[in-house]
Image (cartoon, rainbow, N blue to C red; front, side):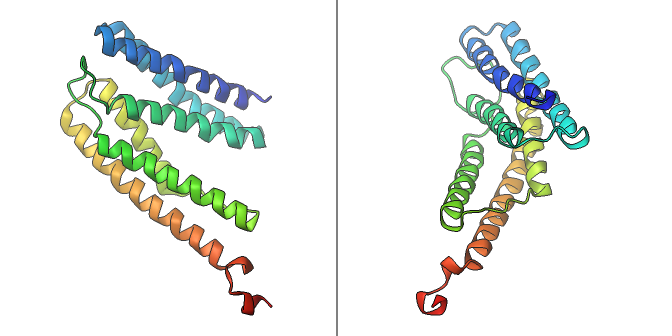
Length: 196
């Protein structure tokens, strides 16, 4: 259990706290809950960079960390996107993340995960090469959530949502193309007469 993994687990623990504070804010409108949610989100975002630095530059990269880190990221982003896109009866936020964008982000990840699972089932191995644009998309998603949490101007929300949509769709297409390439090059994808 390296320091990097401990920080990642701490980030996962922050997610339910973040969700509960947002729900209380929707229910009561008490700004204290929004500030607590913002603080939890900020700490989780900063800790993401810290555990990544420790893993890459301090020799603390582990197989457990390779599973926990993306899990922590997705839990935080999905909870933020979903809660900030749903229209509650009492919603103290003047603006929301577009619901269609939340669908695009979750849909892309569902396709990628399903495709990776199928590739692993057929090939026994999947080569996942992180894309720079995928990291850019993740950062933009975090900025968008933070933007709405801080109640910053609506035009920024529109611009960030557009940027997230474009990068999400592009990375989704690139991951699908890569998955098709890996499958097509494997003997299991060849007709039986060609294999034998």
